[in-house]
Length: 156
Image (tube, rainbow, N blue to C red; front, side, top):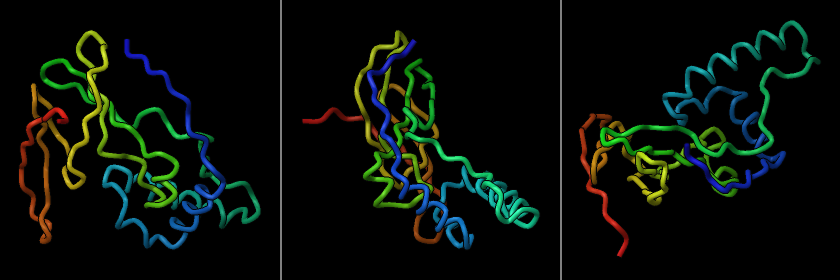
């Protein structure tokens, strides 16, 4: 069991408005995480169909009142749990309206003890975790994939 003392960040109305402005023309799909692209496309199509039937009806897109406690969970080969943290409200409001994930991870040992927070390189798609390292895919300017390993280092 992993526990975290946490107070959810309440999302301001402006976050919902920014997201709706971004999703409306469908030009914003280029900047979204590949994992979210399919889901956002489905929601957009469903919303377009709903509007064609009932333009004044309530939207299909439901928004949470607060940011989630985490975005993803990964279990490393050594049994450590890596918990990807979401953006803060400030980060969300100043960045891409559909980009919730960060490169910050809380790491827990197999017994559930918090070991610390690790920040991975922003351009790295993390795919594997090990004892003292992370590995992932990095893309160059020509969109060519490279496998990269990074050692974990404690701050000075």
